[in-house]
Length: 294
Image (cartoon, rainbow, N blue to C red; front, top):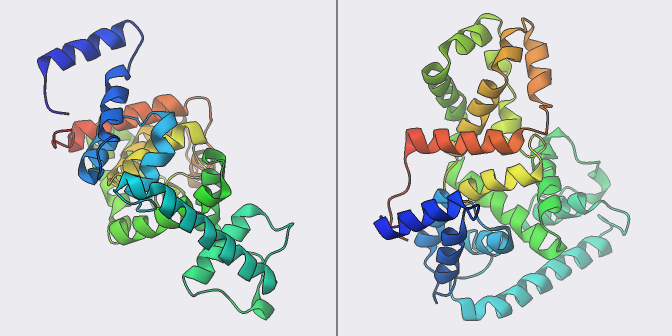
């Protein structure tokens, strides 16, 4: 949002009396009345503020291209999406790739494979393997966030496609980026992880390829995905960084790399909201806020 002393005073007042986010919610509602929607402003808003839960799925669908910027077309396009979903499901049922007992995430995987033209031959179809586990992990997390199966499929598909299209080239560099920021924040911990041989074995696939699906509970995860969907994969680095910082004492006391990795793959779930909040603060500290006016 553009700097406005009066607005900043109101925001500070609202936070002081326990109504944090009131101004931001009003601003988002104003943005959502635009026709066509301004994708740049919606992205900037999502980068700077947490999305209110009542608008999150709608904003995600717009930013991922599931719905077009023109609001008056949303109902029509939503109908087309639902028809396409039903057509794909029926085709997979006829081809006997799925049946009524197939888990929903496996249905979404077969739909994704069919649309991506990588569906295996029916005679060669095996239960999804490790190669598909990134998709299934993201699918299971999205299923917890989104109630409607049609929305769930389109969000999984477009989230994964956009993530790889935008950030596929950046993914191999994220571990080095994590090392850099850890050296700035806690060099002793970095040296310890390096000395015991844990650094190359950290769960980078869980953190970066799966965007913390299966690591963070959905209440915390969706705040991270707000930032990813609106254009930043760097937030993933700072969530990983804050996890390391939050459990520094435990990690420093562990001299076995497998022990470090086992703990990081199954971190306690009660502290994750605070971890994500601190991670966003670190991300803004090092990367700054988007400066487009909202």
